[in-house]
Image 1: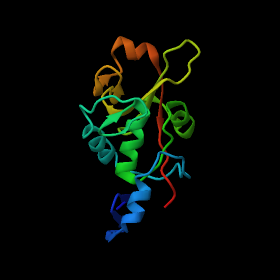
Image 2 (image 1 turned 90 degrees about the vertical axis):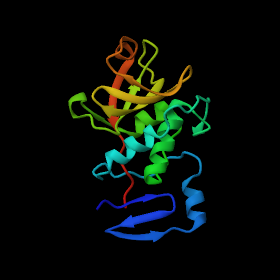
Image 3 (image 1 turned 180 degrees about the horizontal axis):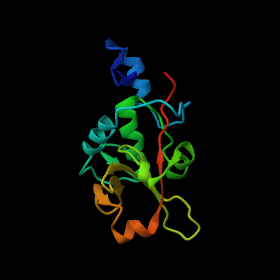
Length: 168
């Protein structure tokens, strides 16, 4: 069994312990960077389920809660909910914190990045669901599932990258 933390519960080698409420509150704090271990495995189904639970949430610039998300806020929320992991609440910073993988090796839970300018500046991020589909927060429709095959996203696609998890 993988070692990871969900708010309020720590699972380690099949043993479950309760984390004090203050630790849970700290876990749910602002999105901020943490140390990473690129080789750490994680439950991709959990990431996908946590992301899908946000479907239909409204868009809110700077938002990182179900009351409203922006694109990087959705990523922060999902990884925080699933692992207690704090990530930067900025798509460019997320890009720098992640590791490039080829599209052939893309796995559910990886992040997909987009650019709306010709310089290739990262302007949007989503969570890859597999089968060329990803979940993301759009300013016009809130949290939705889209396809990388849609012309709009195909033209703007930059990379798929993997989130390294913290050392346990």
